[in-house]
Image (spheres, rainbow, N blue to C red):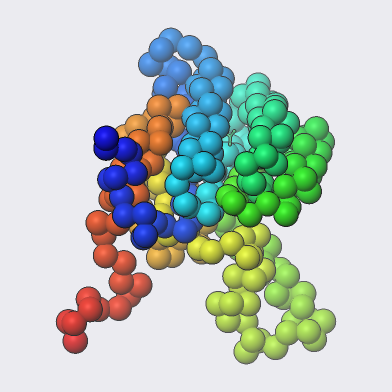
Length: 248
Ligand code: FPP
């Protein structure tokens, strides 16, 4: 019997997939439902994806863009709904994460999120710190430019204090001061809902990532769609700015 994974080469899977989960609002609108119903369905899609990756496919790093720095400008009711949804999600999934060997990490400006959500994040991050089967990063109140500006501030401070020479500020020095330090760069970035932009997501880290844009709205995103994106990734030839092998 053919299984989903027959479509991909399991010896050449991306190590890190980062996903821009877009289209919750349109999914709800198409059903005459409030936008919040779209976010609720989006949380179920995230749960389905995490379960699949945690149990069925060897992809050790997943990053999900759950809330951007710019999303704070949405209507207050929607922002509060999303904050509560994320807190409920983390609280209700914690035991499963521990059981399944999933490590949770969060990147973004947690200083802006409500105390209840921050506390859920902090306890889940601490409770799963030793897990290593799947490292799940949730980008929350995250913006790549803000992350880069914060790294630049750290570098400037260290230089002003005499701990860093200007000549030492190389790519490694910058990467080490990003919130993703220790996480490999994404090999594949997926965006759902037909939009073809990075929207301030992992701008430094995705420099050489393959991009997969799918028309599927996030609440409809299934493991089969993930596998389809992985097959597209595998059909591409990553050259990292070099020439094709044998083409010298
Ligand atoms: C984009 O859809 C989605 C968001 C801003 C929120 C993403 C949040 C979730 C998927 C739910 C919870 C996530 C986790 C990890 C549990 P949109 O509202 O911009 O949709 P639209 O472009 O159709 O309006």
